[in-house]
Length: 149
Image 1 (tube, rainbow, N blue to C red):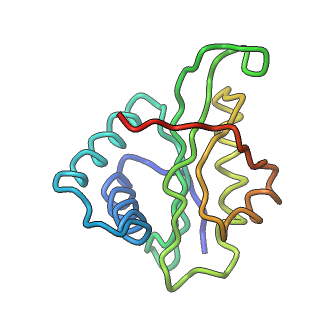
Image 2 (cartoon, rainbow, N blue to C red):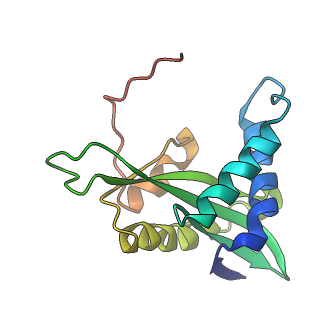
């Protein structure tokens, strides 16, 4: 297995893997046009270097990916520069799960976020993955609120 940083040639693969992940965690059918929206987003933000990440390959096939999106937030006492990274698309193909692949990949994504100047790395996680994220230094926050508009 080889872990490497993503490049523009990976846009289609990352899009496909994101759709697979969303399909697994969503009970409803995915909306029409989501594939195009994801593809455009990834391409745009890879072009401006605000989408970074890594993939794991085995025999030339991408078997897992983890992607961050960098964005500005209002600076505060914790994040003085106001640069935050959001972790998306942490996904391993089903047949490769349980082999510790993400445990090897996520430190690389964290490194990319730090090197880009991000002060915070945020994400949402499935309950089963929380222990892994905690081992890597993430902490569970219970004060996040959300309103659908």
